[in-house]
Each structure stands twice: as C-alpha cells, then as structure tokens.
Length: 304
Image (cartoon, rainbow, N blue to C red; front, side, top):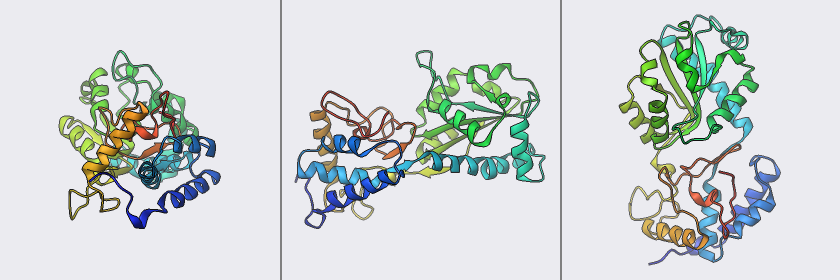
C-alpha cells in the first residue's frame, strides 16, 4: 500500500496551516513570514504531499530568541551552578553573586565560555555556537574576558579551572567529537573541568559522546529521543507510523524519498535524525531536509 490520507484527516492541512499562520503573526515563529510559508507549501503538490506537510508543521519544535534566552537562564541559574558545586568550584552564596561575577569577570576568573566552532581545518568560522555565545553575552552581559575561541584554549592562564562549551544542538554527536579531536580538548581535561551544555540534545548522541569522552561532562537543557523523529514507528505496532497509526513507516519514508527526488533535495544527511527542530538563527542538519533544503525546484521554510 502506498502513502495515503486517512479519511478522518482530510481537513488536517487546512487546520494546521491556519494555526501556523497564527503563530507567524504572533511572532511565536519569528524567523519567517507568510510569504515564505506559502512558497514552501507550494512544494507540496498532491493531497498526500500536503498531508505530509501538515504533519511536518504540526510537529515542528521551534525555539525563538526569547526561548533561547530562557534556556540560558536555566543554564546559568540552575544547571551550571549545580555542576560547579559538585566540583567544588562554586564559592557564591547567592545566584545573584555568581551572575555578577560573570559580568565583572577578569582574566583570573575560573570560568571561560567557549563557542563550538571549527571542527576541521576545512570549516569556515561562524557556526551556531559562535552566534549563541554572542547572544548569551548580550543577554547576561558576560564580561568579554570570559569568552574564548576554541583555538585559544591552550593559552589560557592556570587560574581557569572550568571550560563551558555552548552549542544549539547535539544530534548524532559526530560533529562535537570532531571538534574535541581537532582542538585536542582531552589534553585540557588534565588540569581543567570540561562542561558541555547544548540547548537541545538527542539522547543517543549524548550517550555516545559520554562513552567515548569520559573526561567531558554533558548537561543538555532539553533532551530528545527517537520518539521525536518524524518517521517514528507506533509503539504498539512498529510497522505503523506513530503520527497517524494507519500509514506504514516504510510508505512514509518512500513518499519522503519521492518528494525529495522531485524537489532535487536530500531525503536526509549524514547527521540526519528526521527531527523537526528549528532555531531562530538557523536550522540544524539533524532536521528533516524538507524544512531547510534549497534548490531550483524547492523553496525552504527556514534557513540552514
């Protein structure tokens, strides 16, 4: 059987697109407008295509600037202080004192915030980690002296006891593993604590990183798992698609492949996890390419 629209879901496309337009107008989805939405919806031709598009929009997990700043607050007021206490690296009585130390910090401060950038010699600088470090500094007013480029970590003074790495997402964990190797971070773990806090992390990727890098402490703000994948199977019947429990997972994947081929886009990437995640500043490559791919015959919804 090929991919089909279940009878009870004939109105799903209209319902979902109407709600999504409301989110755009209210700036909940803050990085696109309705013109861009219409262009993206134009990629989907048949009723089955539009049914698939409706589920993509309905399952989208979007993090706006305000939501990202909320994650920063969670990191600096809860997650990081808790870990620093466990390491005996936290001397502040009140959280306000800790935040003030970040704002007033000088070269002797024991913390440095490091953007995840340049995982190989062929990479161009300016990945999402750099953007997030800049946004973190603006939100909390962290002293510039507490920010460090990854290539400058080895030159830090001995007073620096903890390196805090920031990125938007860990998916498969492959990219961060390349980053640690390229910058020889294991050597830094001899005299310092290395703390990695992505805003979102895929459970399997975190487990693989933790197993391969026991000297690295990973505490994500949000944890996702295989159930967040767009093609996730139904728990009671693994052959069926969890999102409607009527289409077969194999048929969903085949239809995605059909649309991808027609649009000249990849159905997935080497880091692909079929996630439906978007940030205001970018879309991770762990996300279904239909959301960000751009070709002569395919218009993206979000920027990659």
